[in-house]
Picture 1 (cartoon, chains in turn purple, blue):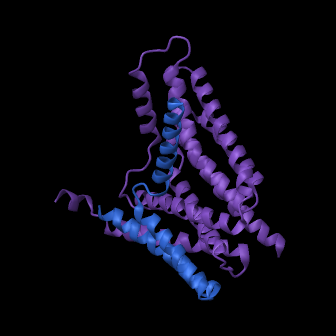
Picture 2 (tube, one colour):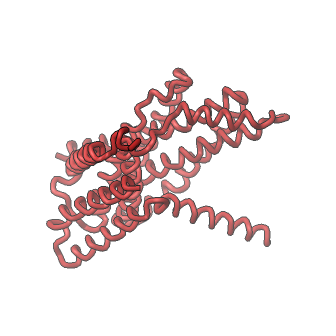
Picture 3 (cartoon, each protein chain N blue to C red):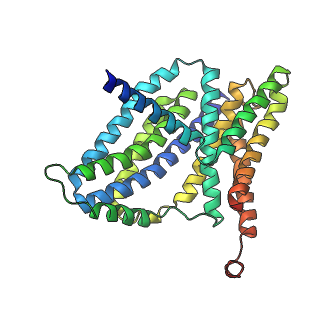
Length: 253
Length: 76
């Protein structure tokens, strides 16, 4: 029974961290590729490397500190943050799936970054503009990954596992991304975002409850029921919104 | 000293702004819904029915918050 429950929560944790990391990595990589192709790879790599170091330092500083917070308090805070964060992701993904919000287009993001960089003159020694843009892109996208890794990892007492999964996703998505170069728009980003949103809301519900002394039937296995329920709700919401959305003829009229 | 305090102030303001944007941003209804959920489940816990009732009420409130937020966004 213990083995079953441990593997259930671990599997959901691994899936959530990997998908969240992969989605954010695709967005960061688009910026880095735009910087590299337009201004040269040296500044793009230096900016990205410094951002990854800064994010690693954040995990190293705040990770061990969070372990000292009483477990119920930690789970209540983390659960609440995950609920808000997860619902924000789900809301966006639902609206995009229903066609009520434009999908995040990596080709468009790439073209925008290239246009921005092309308007600035070249740097003298080190290309400061390219360095800052690569740093900001990787750091800001990575910050969401750090929050996911820290909150999920510490609450489940598996910070090492969460950090390792994030590192694997970083290397894997980085390698694939560099390989496919400018074809990142073919990544099913919205579906991945929806999957992460469902898992974050499931963990958020579970830990908010645990923090408030709720005992879930079946312990960690109850997480899977949350995943199923929220998937069903998302599917129903997308279906209803698609039916209600005005047709092109109605919009023209 | 004044330069240090200005830098510190900027850092604190930036930190606060990050968390405000992260947790509230353009979806204040989701933030308020989570606060309301915590209050309701705490009250249920005090009444001594935490596990039995909260198992249903907690996810139901989360689903309601998500539906309201999505419907609100769809209307705009």
